[in-house]
Structures are given as structure tokens and as C-alpha cells.
Length: 427
Ligand SMILES: *Cc1c(COP(=O)(O)O)cnc(C)c1O
Ligand SMILES: [Zn+2]
Image (tube, rainbow, N blue to C red; front, side, top):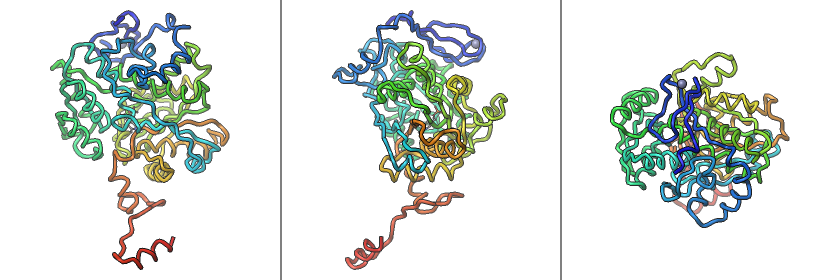
């Protein structure tokens, strides 16, 4: 490993630290960016190399993260803990486009990662860094998908995993994964923010490697969503890139990756980034619209993956929005669930938080921020099966304060041929 090729730099005060070490914050308390030396890469890495690797048989080339390793974490392939993450499909859905009022929308489905969410892209890099540092215990606080992903990567690398989950409000698909992959699962009697504070303390005291998105290497892995999307598009930049925002690591990551890609000349400009928050968990939206510093709030939304009132990476996220001339929007749970009904019935399917993307697209078109003919890409962050309760609850009309406007309820029917034929012909 060439430790000289990257550094950690505080986003608050600019203090720099060695790249390989157990450090998540600056001495001033600020969060850290991984800083790559891009100059030596100029002319050495580019679209041709990345496109060639995509057709290779080597694991480090086929992974949709490690394919871009020079821009992410240049470690030797034997150290990589990879499950072939990424390589997710980009759906061209006329039904979703029509719903949003767009001519066309392309949806990159990160729910098609090995454990069903984009968290795998960060986790392969975070877990690899744990191995590089010689740590054999890892931990995270999570609303679900981070723990599912960490548990799986830790299990495949033979590491012990501890997940801190807020009591209640964790979707069943995700909790089952953490349990199944063998992570010690600690259900904290408190909310996500309480679990987050505690896990940081425990990791510092016990020398356990922290794999929340405060870990700057996870952010590096998640940059690959944007890079792979550009590769999918033949390195042509769309007008807009839309994604949901909770703890705001992902929007930070994608913006950072694209900004570095532009610096290297891989792309000519940045897409405008639109971060969509649930109205019940929208502190970045408030900060963006008022111009004031972020004010934490009590979070409440059906979209549990973005139910976060004190987002860790809000400054990095806002930096990306501003740099790309982007926007922050907020959508209600009703708008999220109605958009979800369309993502699902288009045959794509995604968990509630993911569908803030389509709900946000629709709202931004209605507000005239996005034009019908703009080229628009969205990220679907997690798999449909992560939250089956939300699906069945919606279609059966059993969700609190949600109208099931596009319900497809199961139909009870007598066990006779006549009754079934009658039902089928009823349409
Ligand atoms: C983690 C997650 C999000 C939110 O991403 P942040 O980086 O916390 O903003 C959105 N959707 C899904 C499915 C997630 O797992
Ligand atoms: Zn600092």
C-alpha cells in the first residue's frame, strides 16, 4: 500500500492527518475528507481503463467500487474484502417518467447490491480499511441498512460485528439481515442519534473500528455510485442527479467523487444534485431554504432509512449541493408512498426512503426547477424487500395517516372456479 497517496483533511479547520490510521474526527471535532493526490493520476486513469476493467474477469476489476480504486483507495487486491458490489442496473422507466412529469428518467437501482442497499459500496472499503489497519472488530449505529451491510462484510472477512440499533423503527428486512449474518445486535433504548453517540464512545474506548459514515473511507466507496453512473452513461453528464438524504453521507460522497472526476477531466461538468428529504426529517432542507446553520430536529417519517434529525454529514452534503448549483427539497410521507407505488408497479421496486427520489423529481418538475426535457437520473437506494411491512400496509390501507391512493390489495375469494373466473373478468 502506498500510504503517501492520500491524506485525511478536516473540513472545518483544514488540519491534515496521515491517511492510514484510526481517526474519524479532527482534534477540533470536525469531520474528515480523504484527500487524494490527483495530479499523478492524470493521463494514467480514465474512461478507457475503467471501461476495459468492466469487461475483465478479475474481482478487483469487476467490483463496481474497486474498478475505480485509484480514485477510492489504492490498496492491493489481496487486501480487498469484496462481494462484487455495484454493477447495478440503470432503469429507463417511461412509467416513472410520466408520473414525475418528465420526458425521461433513468433510475440507478442501488438496491441491487449484495445486501440490498448502496451501503455495500461504502462497506467494502470500510471493511478493507479495517483489515489494512489490523482491526478485527467493527461496529456501527444504524437505522438498518448499514448494519445489514456491515454484518455481511464482517462475516465474510471473519471479523466480529456489533450493531447498535434504535429500539423500534427498524424495518424487518434489515434487522433480519444483521441477526442472520451473526452480528451482535444491541437494541438501544433510544433513537438513532443516541445510538450514534454511544457507538462512537464504545469504539474509542474498546479500539473497535467504527464503520458509520463518519468513517471517511465509507464515503470514498460510495463515490463509486456517481462514477459508475457516469460510466453507464458513456461519461455524458446528465442535467440532474436526484437522491434521498438522511445522514447525508451519500450525497456528500457522490458530489465528492464527481468533483474529483471533473478535476481529472473524466467528465466536463457536474450534474446538478438534488437532495430529497422526508418532511418529517428535513433539517438540511430547512438550512438550505433559510440559509441558516443546520438546526437538529426530532425525526419522524415512515421512510426509516432517512429518519435522522441530526445528520452527521450535512456540511459536506451542502458543499456538494452548492458546488453543483443543486437544490434540497422535502416531500411528505404521502408523496413518498405514492411515488413508491409507481416505482414498484413499474416493475422496479424499492424501499420507501429510495422513493423520495421520484417524489422529489415530481415536486421539482411541478415547481419548475426541473424542466420536462432535462436529462434526469435518480438513485434508488434500497431494495423493495427491505421493508415488507410498508408495502403490505400501504396496499391494505393500514398505514397511519397515509391514503392508499394506488392500492393493489389482496382480494379474499371463495375457493371455487366460478368465483375466480368472475373475479378475473371483473378487471
Ligand atoms: C442509508 C440510506 C439512505 C440515506 O443515505 P444517507 O447517506 O444517510 O443520506 C437512503 N436510503 C436508503 C435505503 C439507505 O439505506
Ligand atoms: Zn479541524
